[in-house]
Image (cartoon, rainbow, N blue to C red; front, side):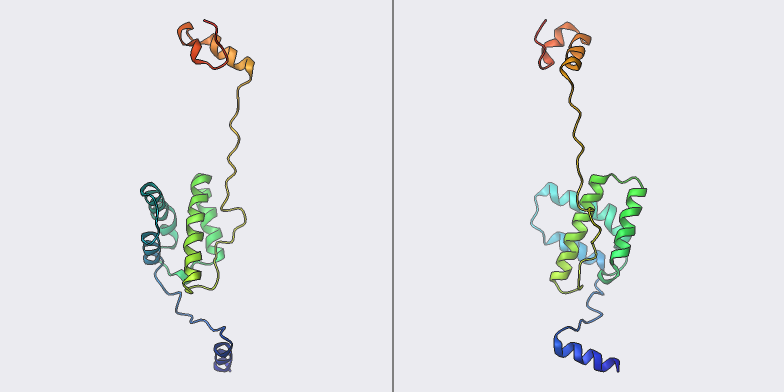
Length: 155
């Protein structure tokens, strides 16, 4: 019975070899990074994120082991460990791009990086001093440095 279903899937072009995702995640990650055309600093940053934040969780397994639930747990664990949100967003972007390539390579059927909002970080707006606060700063510093405070040009 199972063989008949497999044969039907093959004839429809819907069968996937269950072993094709049995590629070492760590080796795939290394090859993925090596094949990217990146500026030197971007390559260093991506390598560090993969080494420090992605491989410790997924490196010992295969591509097929990376599913949505472990990705969600990985993200939660990194947040709980105090990893900053910008770094976590970068790690998620790299993992998602890597898994998109694995989909394109037909090693997995779909990308498991499906946590909504995980690839975005809204940078909070930096506070801006009011005019009165700028004057207070200018008045609080030594007279010879007052010209360095924008908007306060009295000596």
